[in-house]
Amino acid sequence: MKALNYHNHTFIGAANRSSLIDLVIPEDFNGKMILFIHGFMGYKDWGAWNLMQDFYTTKGFGFCKFNVSHNGTSSDNPTEFTDLTAFANNSYSKELEDLTAAIDWVEQQVDELPKIYLVGHSRGGGIALLGAKDERVYRVVTLAAISSIEKRFPQDKQIQVWETQGTKYTLNGRTNQKMPQLFAQYEDYIANKDLLDIQKACETSTKRTLVIHGDADTSVDIEEGHNIANWLKTRLFEIEEADHTFGAKEPWESTELPEHLQKVCELIIGFLLIED
Image 1: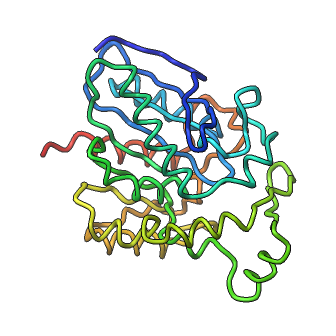
Image 2: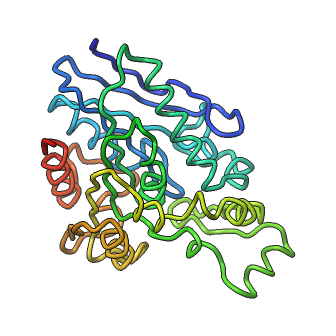
């Protein structure tokens, strides 16, 4: 397979919205392709994700990462949340569509689709578990993944308030933006509840999966990692003292991976190299 190095190319995701995607296939490509899915209020170039890409491509792995189509960034501003209308209209089912579209795009760039290893962080980890049923996906890795979409929504009276007001806001602690979410996001979940059932996806999965979580994660409790591992009947790999992003932050100014994310990357390498 020929070497490729695409940065900020576009693909067409959910609702026919264009979004940015990167693809690197090194000269010494080993036939294994990582497809990375970022999390909530994230993007493909956040923090140390580019360093993580370099970690793998220098070892012969292909690497693809993309912005989900309604994450609030745009082709002109790939690292800033300038399109809050898109963010407000996002949904979990849209992100699942984006994943399928990203795999389709990769397939169009190569002569023969290599083995796809989904790696998802946080919300992206939940999407990876849901998307694992795609026959083109070979294995899955979750990093601090959510185990329930329903738990991401308000409960009881708060749902009623959201429905009445039509929009709720979540503060982005890094940018101090009030990020809008339309009530239609919850309605989309209810309409697609079976499709978005992470527990069911895990219990019926036939794909080998590596589950990783930091034991100091204050954003997604490690209990959710235990849930995922239990449903998959596999082991949870805990990274001691690691937070939700395994030490990374935005901006990440070092040329080295944070210590905990380095451990994660090395752990994943072992998983990628396991033979059937």
